[in-house]
Image 1 (cartoon, rainbow, N blue to C red):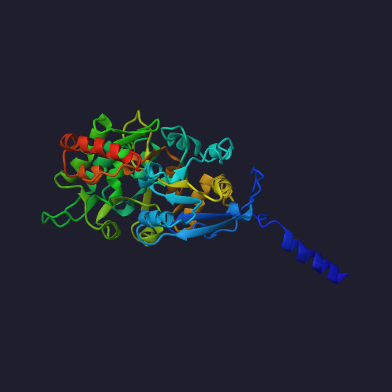
Image 2 (cartoon, one colour; image 1 turned 180 degrees about the horizontal axis):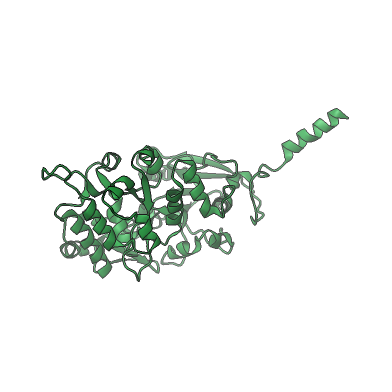
Length: 428
């Protein structure tokens, strides 16, 4: 009898669903004829499991398997070589520069035939509007957002803020007063020549390279826009002039309020009060500052009262490659990933968005700062469309720091038109 019981529990353990310990509420039933999906990516596609409550449902629930082809060398050139060599790839992850380049190169096919976009999960994770925004001019969806996330958050040195007698920026955010005007006032107040030798010792902000982009995105527009399947030149928009003028004033103020030195070391050493950068820098690069200076986190300041408080958004695209051997499997993978987002909820969290707060607290953030990161991720996002159209003469947002906008817009307008035409012409 004892041996029978032991055998029963061994068989139960062997044949019980592997997903028994994760939430699978509402997931559709689906069978996989071909369980293997080949994905081209810059690192292993299947995430390492950090928490017991998280799961990768394509594998854990549907029994799928991912073969990742990890890029070597130049990401895109390597992909083109693999395709030319006849390597069968079902799906590919790519960044902004792939759209519309992959469509123009005839490398990808629409998802519409394979993905159930009527599934409620697309609305539940706030993905539908973004997917609709990215329809191509033929009405099809070629690129599914694989991972849309804010470009960065605004960290600030609490000690410097307090020493200057200024209110905590988070209090201004709560009062609806964290805007461009007050932000610039803080930069002026916090820029200091401490020893009076005529050299600035502490800057209001140190430029990370992402900061100029975030300035433009906070207006709700970028120098190049995308709407109804078409890219267009947006340099003459009044909002873009405001963004360009705002950046130029920072680099030409007296004293100059923005440093262009090494951002990490300058902020770490207390030589800048603000830095706009990736949220994970708060535990990778700035971890000690929680105890020494104190760190705060706020969203990018609001442009105008009549415009939502847009945060710049990076997008990783997920493409279905032409010639895919398992398009159905790739489509189920795309759907399962959305359920991962929705259902990977930390114990005690209100929802998947609140899990972000708990995750950052686990990594050392103070509670208010962790809550701010979660809030920022839920704010209106502005996709950085200007990254989709390569311009030979460099980055417009960066150039705005050193060239008056009226001059820059006039000199770049024809080049932008030409770049859009080149980027949207099919490659034979």
